Length: 167
Image (cartoon, rainbow, N blue to C red):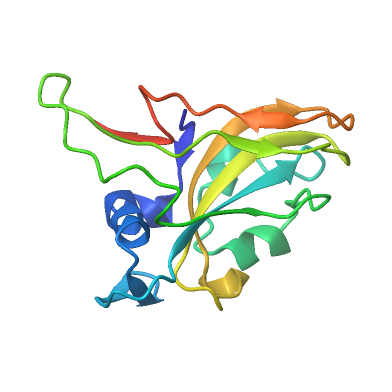
């Protein structure tokens, strides 16, 4: 499902996924404190069509605060989805036949979605529960065009490709 990997996340998505799946505390982006306290999470949110920057600009942001401080707008009619260790599948083994490694997130439902037009779904890494947007690392973004009309919307992530495929 991944359309683009953020430049800051290249080569690191396996680490971030592992940190969330194994309930690790990460004190700063890329700096683990290997403990067993559950804190890290993947955050999923929408970017509105209005103000959305081109892909080649969008993938350059190193944190969510900077991405949202630019022209990009978060669709905020519903809360961000938080995926913790209990939501994620086990860290996958590589597919040695296809020479790939696929990271999967569960399908996500937004109930009675309303608000402005949506063009992207953004998956980010939050290092701990208290982290502000400046500490949240954008990982991938996906084309996800939705016209909110009050109905439920599901992000159906392919079990074959996952939200990120390395290979």
